[in-house]
Length: 279
Image (cartoon, rainbow, N blue to C red; front, side, top):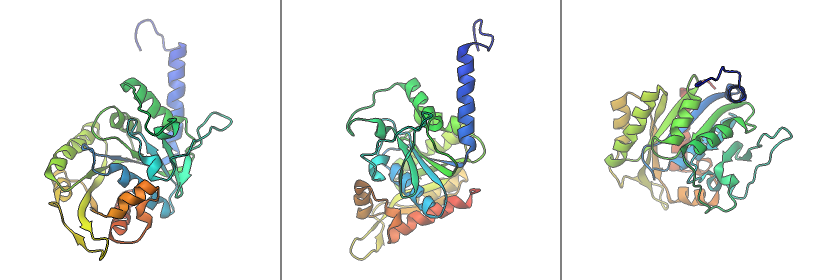
């Protein structure tokens, strides 16, 4: 509050109303799981989509919120590229649904998939909060949030908005040390904000032969486990490289619902996440 404002102006009233709507929405979501990484290209959206589908398959009511404003890939990965969510009679957005997961993404609002989103920080912050309060999430056991890489506007807004009981982050890394160094920034980011870290997933750890199914390490491995040990957080597991994961993402059919070592690794990681949740 500043200037001559007494707290009774229209702006203050609107802000209070927005905060009440946000608190009401968040109060209906038991657990909020933010998937993030300090490094791009680690397969974070793949992890978010497959975690959401696996958790839904376990019987939980799950939502998936894509806040990667400039590169939304969740619609394609969930087979919802052509989805255009509508609003109910109260103006609340009805999320799209796939694999038992309620899904919202900026990608649904674009006329064309290759349209760029050219927004500065304040606009992105406002839109992210709208995607939480103006969407008809209803009662959820878990809301999975897919963040863009880094520690900028989007993850900062999400973590500050969701901070509190029932909120935690899954940090995604790859086996290489260069990735681990950047991912350390995400862990320290969470520590700075006092945002709980549910654990670390090491993606692209080993290669699954499409012919025999054997897993062979093609990169150095163990970076995720070392990070977990260094920072005293849980290691949630390794996810191997499988050519079918890429194909399933392009086809909009989450791979974790299939069979094989990579799919089983996704399910194992989801089970490890659930161990620390009250749902």
